[in-house]
Image 1 (cartoon, rainbow, N blue to C red):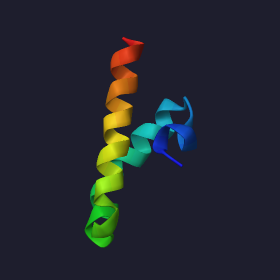
Image 2: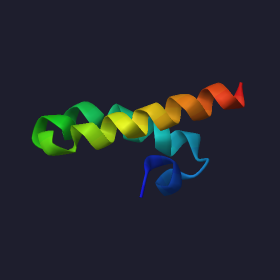
Image 3: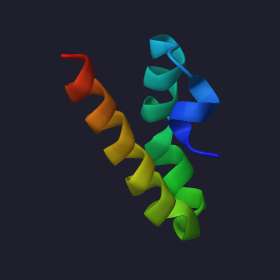
Length: 50
């Protein structure tokens, strides 16, 4: 499951998830590649909305 599927169109939840990323990344380095993929998806989605 990716971030867009998990949070749908709820912008507030997406923002909260992004704000928590630094703390999550410090504890789970093995997930960083997937996090980067999800951030790229969010960026693409924002660009498409504009």
